[in-house]
Structure formats: C-alpha cells, structure tokens
Image (cartoon, rainbow, N blue to C red; front, side, top):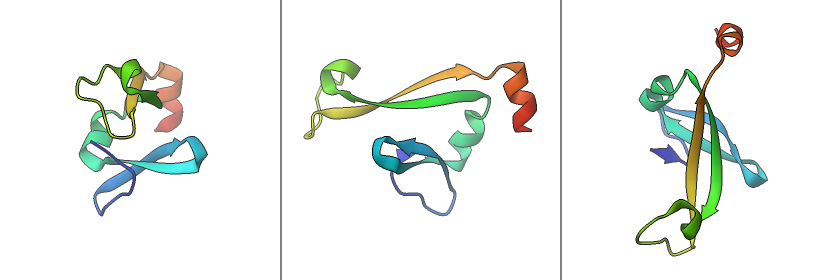
Length: 75
C-alpha cells in the first residue's frame, strides 16, 4: 500500500510530481529496502487498470535491485 499522507507506522519514501510526499507502510518499506523505487503517474490505459479510476490516472511502481555499491552506501 502507498499513502499520500502517512500515519504513525508509515515511512515517507519519496515525492511525486509537484513535490507531493509519498508514504509506504513501515513493514512494506523494510520489505522493499533492497530496491530502488520509482513511482510513475500513468493513465488507466498505460497501467492496464480494468475498471479505471474516476480521475483516469493511477500509480505504477517500478523497481530494481540496488547494486552492491548502493547497498554499501545506505547502511
């Protein structure tokens, strides 16, 4: 789950366009800690949402494993 506003156990892990902070549950943040994450804002057609959204947009998380160098500098 990703959140636009965080609660007590949530972790802010970045910003989307316009500087809006993006939040993730603390458990999920730990689970994804070995990855570089990019959140894209896409149209329903781009992300294949079958039911669509009222605004016609969605969020798509792209990730890749961190390199050994990146892992060593984040510890």
